[in-house]
Length: 165
View 1 (cartoon, rainbow, N blue to C red):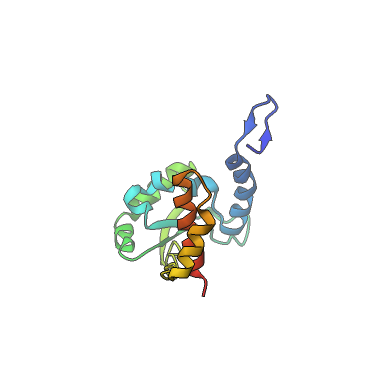
View 2 (tube, one colour):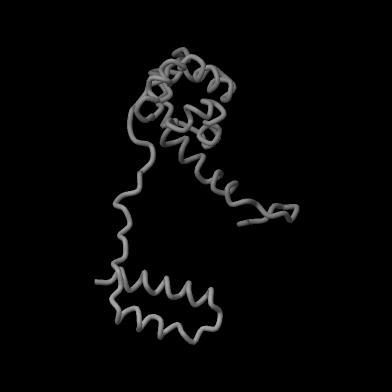
């Protein structure tokens, strides 16, 4: 909990972060934190796994008298999710408009790109210890009375020594 409300109850950090991020997202991407957080409810769990709303592109108005034109919602997706998303664009447009409370979105533009950074290189496996290293390690932890703690520390030591060259 990061702050306190006037009534004395603590404020969750997520509320404070939303207050900070929402204006930034609105200015940069034309999108609100609420839309991003509610994306699974809007798109459904099957599509939400492989898609995310990127930004809302509003058309430029040359004069104040120009009529209102709906915006384009840019959605990033991975692989075959683009095909599923394309088939459900009408439904998603109506759900987003219902979420926003007015007919803000007229079209959806699909952008294919990876959504999450996959884990890079696999973790290196420790090399097997030599007999001298094992003896020195067991001598270091032999004075520990608790057998479970001693075994855990021995495994930790074997991992540390095994990752060194």
